[in-house]
Image (cartoon, rainbow, N blue to C red; front, side, top):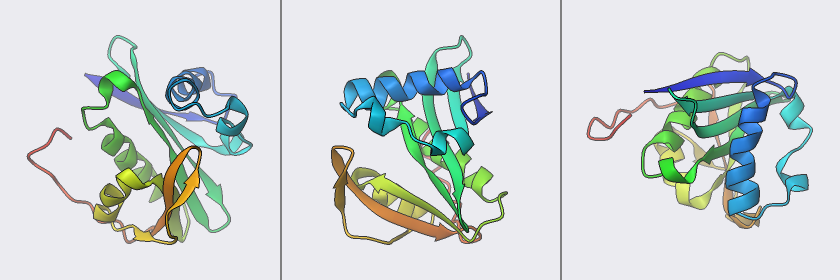
Length: 157
């Protein structure tokens, strides 16, 4: 069993758990400097935190407003859980919550390896691939009322 919960901003006592996951995945594993991993958007973001029933951290992600858009990203899944569908679970949670926020579009900069998953949800490409945070990314977006909710009954979701 696992649980997902929302932490609001950096003052929420649960933010330290979110920070722990991002530190392990982005700073330690991917070598992103901590000064580049955390920014002013963390203060206003809704942070998703996923953990096992026993408290073992699984994943974290964030979303925040930016003008008429909602930005999603920083989906980090702990190494031991990457073979499962937790990345997609986080994306689904971000999109579900993103639909409840008044906005025109949901936007992201996604690692190119995950772009196909975002396309399944109705995202379109807004840029050519570019290098950022040490890997290739692409800007993508979807109208907040244009999300495609698909089912992959053969997988664990």
